[in-house]
Length: 107
Image 1 (cartoon, rainbow, N blue to C red):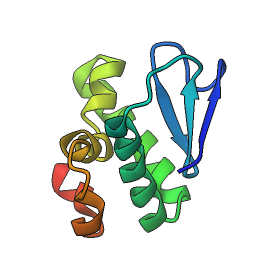
Image 2 (cartoon, rainbow, N blue to C red):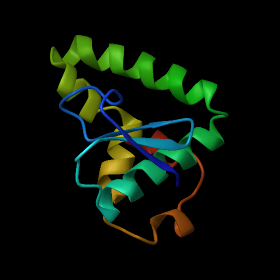
Image 3 (tube, rainbow, N blue to C red):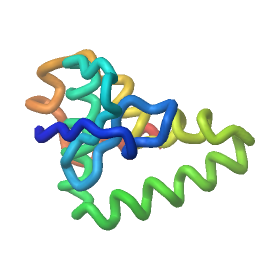
Image 4 (cartoon, rainbow, N blue to C red):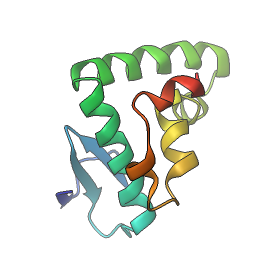
């Protein structure tokens, strides 16, 4: 995975964001193997959803959860795509055994 360090993307308060399979990290942020694996899980999700549908689903689900949680951070953490990534980020072999659309069971 290509990692681009900069001061613009992602927003302050976040270490990294995955855009179209490229990880953008805040300059000076500690990029651990766990963080890279988390973003690789998102890349797998993007590929199976043909990128466009990943972003459409992500925004739609975040908006629905925002109404329920009344907190942007809680809404972010509770999206099915993030839940799959957070639950499996410490498993270095997860992507080898991951089945397509595993995030659906996290809804």
